[in-house]
Length: 101
Image (cartoon, rainbow, N blue to C red):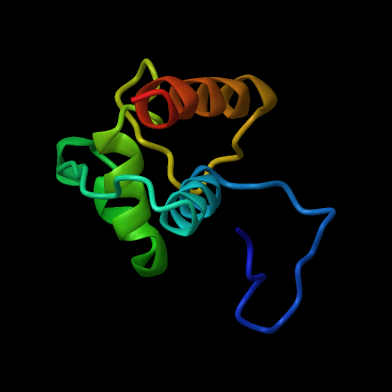
């Protein structure tokens, strides 16, 4: 579920960040009445404190459900682009960890 940017635009040609992807999946889970109670401590990541305020709950939920984890170097990379392989992994884990429960 995407509501666009604060200025009312959607910017469809922009890349999607990892925190934006988490927010969309979180919103969709709420819409579908799925369990949104999972949480995680993002401060365990060296860059966990740079998660945008608007995405913090969604990133905690996504990490708590093992949808979005850190990179090999330990970074969460919330503002990094959600590349195709990561998006596929997130969707697969979403199906396994939330939908099929």
